[in-house]
Length: 449
Image 1 (cartoon, one colour):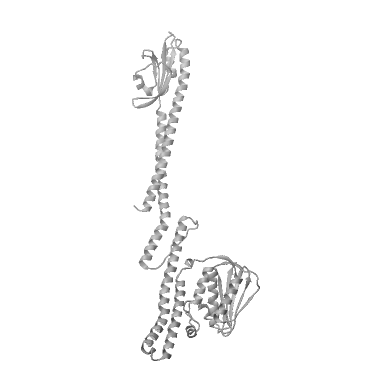
Image 2 (cartoon, helix red, strand yellow; image 1 turned 135 degrees about the vertical axis):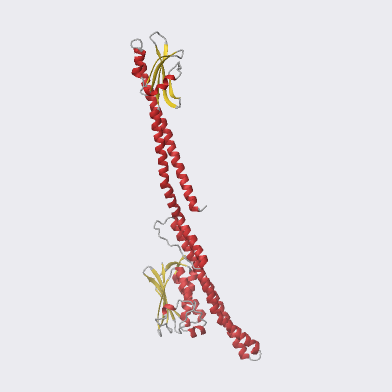
């Protein structure tokens, strides 16, 4: 059975059970109340009649006296201690009661009885006869009016139950559609994804932000992560096969040259070893960058902690100066720059821009850092070859090189700025790049405090 059918069945069954139980309770309580009220009324009439009959016996004929108090739908009679009827009066509608065998009761009694398949109220009270003997004054009245009311109540409640089940069934079907709708959409989209191999998302229209909306939103987020990871893996394979082809070809060529002529020609031997070593280093760096780019930002295990930017920038500049023997000029106020970020990833980001500045300029590199509004600002400026305005938006694309020949010669892979963009996105840092050909390039890092 489908889930929608189960929801419809269980909801309708539960509501029907509640309605039936509630109406049955109402029926039982109300019917008891109706019969009780009729019995109480009969008891009151009995007390009134017995008081008058006891005083009037011997003064008025028994038949005439009893006809005065006979119920409109019943019988009144006097029964001797021997169980014989002394006198009786019966209404026209209940002549059958006259055939009922009388019975004497030693004490006052009353209740509900059945005779010939019909309900009656019965009241019996001892009275003293003029002769000094004791007899029963008994009044029997039909409960058919009360039974009619109870039957009408039962019919009304039955019709109300069936009438109420119609909107219950409709609402359960509507509820099933609401609940199953997103699940059916998920199933359909998953089947379509499996069939077409393309990632798709559930259109979300609800504004209530309920659990079903959250489920759909979570599904879409999961599909987004899968699509991102799939594209990263696909791009990793494409990038790796594209970028590793050249160094592998160079290594293969020089290895073959070494095998043929390396032992005879010292110059060729040195050239081949240098080329192989250089390409091996570049392949190592390239592989590390590709592996990092293949990861999703959420899998970088970031450690966001409060820190002062000043020591980090100063230490990074000194380390770069020592490693590449290039002067780095620092311009800052010395005031603490407190931010929340990942120290290692930010240091890696700084080294990417410092490395670019070193590769494409010979002049000293200038680092300026301080506050700008509600953010800390770090700028890295060089006086290098610069970048044309039409090429500036493309520099963050993977494997894009402004000067391809020079970049290849310097060991660039075209992944540095792409990796910088990924790191900045993960850390919530805004990047801005300004450049003019022949003047230089300035990279600005805006870090939220």
